[in-house]
Length: 438
Ligand code: NDP
Image (cartoon, rainbow, N blue to C red; front, side):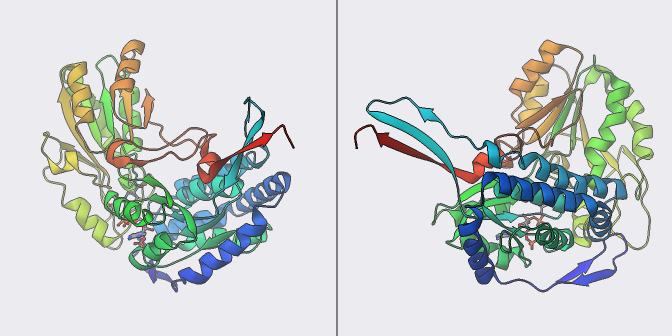
């Protein structure tokens, strides 16, 4: 597999695809001993893994800048996020407490048993964090993990796999399996010894994976697309909202399932808000604020949505898959309003009432994230409860924080990742009744 720097179009590596059978066999063998590592020792190993990652932040960030085209600042944050996830979930092995349930005639206790081999299938938009959202809690709960990185962006995952060994994780506990999704990914999902798949990517492939998991009842978590709306009321802090919005939609060149790609703005402040937004859009710079799109195909796809922009930043010409920050006026039937563009494109539509804003925000097959901007607390809560999405923020654009649960409703996915309960999603509850009679 030829690996290309999307900022220069230079070939930077050549990777051989791995073989699914031996990798799963190895992970299965490692599981037998990893599940027996005492909780305290497993916690120590995860903490050591976190410090090895910490010592390699610059190296991992440099790899991601070249492989995924991320900005230096983003790539460093992403490597730091892997460290933080390992630190956070290193608290879990010693806290995976079951219940003692009062019953007649004896005692009843529950255990959180690890599932076995877990496959984490990762897309190209955030290769490091998305891999760690799966592997950190899965390892903490006593599973072994196989990461299947995206074909375009395997380099940081391969290095993280090496660092896991350097930190002392036994061989086979965390393995990286490269190869095309349509072959390697498909085979991994259907392997009878893989007990859970965590998938992040497109809705179409997510549905195929869910179907492929059915024959063996393989557990599955799906983090799919999004079409997040910012609902901006006239009483909001408009200057603050205008300054924050470009980061929320154009960061990572909009290749983010939580990108606030739709703006619903109350009609009475529509023109004023766009005037406040314009300088921030024009100043959103390629190279420092966002990188290129991941591939020529992605740039072509994004460009197909753009016609007659309301405002647009600039992008370098020549080599690299650059695309400028773009704002479009939208009507309810427009493709760019309805489909996940996955590029730096914001679609704007006015609304006249709270109920209309809620109806328009929910008029989508997706339901991952969104933002509500208002100074009216009652309205903020009413709208938060009415918008069909898994992760909402008020007067802020935050979505993914490892302390809090993350995931979507409707076609945006199934199950939740992150937050304090994530390790439980990598276990099955076992219930044991002990009779008081011998
Ligand atoms: P895909 O859904 O095709 O890929 C995501 C991951 O799944 C990759 O590792 C891919 O491997 C793997 N994969 C692909 N097919 C299979 C399969 N049949 N069985 C198992 N694994 C498989 O996303 P794309 O990269 O094609 O992106 C297309 C669109 O999807 C984007 O434009 C965007 O709209 C959306 N998307 C959403 C993401 C999100 O964060 N929710 C992330 C990425 C994309 P390989 O790369 O080798 O094909």
